[in-house]
Image (cartoon, rainbow, N blue to C red; front, side, top):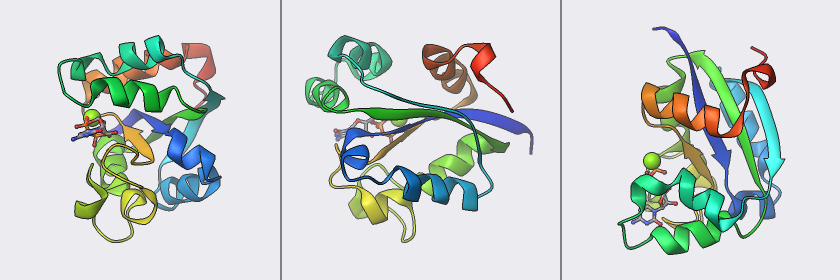
Length: 140
Ligand code: CDP
Ligand code: MG
């Protein structure tokens, strides 16, 4: 499997509960390297742009409000097959369906407030990384 990079976000429900370190430990234990990371507060418009693929979904407005409600930690994870590996460590979108030991099984509060975001494919990973980071900020 090739070395990949993926965009991860530790969402407001998790930063609020001081879970950044515990979530980062899950990534590192899985062999994912955090090669860029910053804590930022999104505006609703910035959250809306990031999640625009979901603009027609009923949860979109609530999702944008939530993502702008408190700080998030945006990060780039690197590793062998990082995109799929990160999705595995995250667990299913709905924590009720997430496998034991995954971040969402352990920490998510609901299907909406589910602690982490992870890119779902190489094309989206490239776009999402570029949304938050310049090349100079990526130190592998
Ligand atoms: O984050 P993931 O890729 O697993 O799921 P998604 O289908 O791409 O949805 C993006 C985000 O929208 C989720 O992580 C949830 O925060 C939110 N969502 C929601 O609030 N209600 C749903 N029924 C589905 C997703
Ligand atoms: Mg998604």
